[in-house]
Image (cartoon, rainbow, N blue to C red):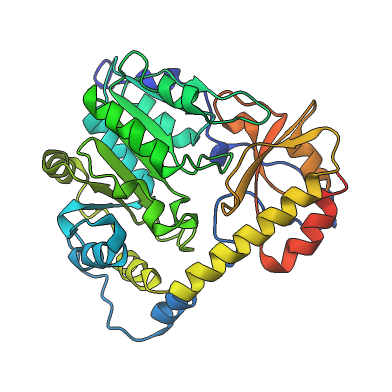
Length: 366
């Protein structure tokens, strides 16, 4: 009875997200250093552990609030440089939950969106699942630079929306705020939405977020997964200065998108400034040491990147970068999980502090 009643256009999308890739084999008996998915290398926030271990009278019997008003107020107060109010904050089930709903609002069959490729695969896939068409500006490897020409190319043909992950995933390169502001202004003049995905945005100064741009066409997405150490929380939010977009988003997104406990922990970790500062400090130090360990390599190039971000894209002249790292007991995300990359590239995240020295030793020998 369901024949011809379901939209199946998304089945034609052949690109596989890196998180769904087949497992890779590592040598027996060799401890694997985890540098794959974008979790916080320092582990759980002490604030999160305190909330989970204390008796707070938390009840999950009833449904959560349709909108977590306390969290929205906390976000607005935490990021004073953004100069936004709770009405500008749109909370959902992770930053992916935000993207799913906003793509349903902004895109649809036949509509075109652009981006700088390679970029976060699953954000692109969710847009394609609406029936939209992807017309990216392809960055040139192995350095994958982002300059004025690439940014101008995003607006070519006046797409319905521009999807820009900042910092870029997988390179870790963040477009400077001044350049982002110019792009946003030009996009507004042409009636183009600018979606700024700041999943790794906590590794930038708060005042450098795209959320400071006071334009109605800019939507900035944020996550608790990376810098805040809450990948298991599934809480994310967007900042929008368009009342019409905000109203439509709230109407369209599924009810009770963020769980009661998740929201409570998310609010707690926002106040853990010491954890956030330690995370930023360690990520910057480890990234610098990673780059130094690769300096002597004759055939591996690190893409242009921003110093404080915890990810980097490595590209070899030939062969599988993932397998070379796996042979040294280092996990990563293969380039084959990204549009316009192949097995010669791999995204590597800085490891936990206790594994850093051994990681650097192995990296210098591949």
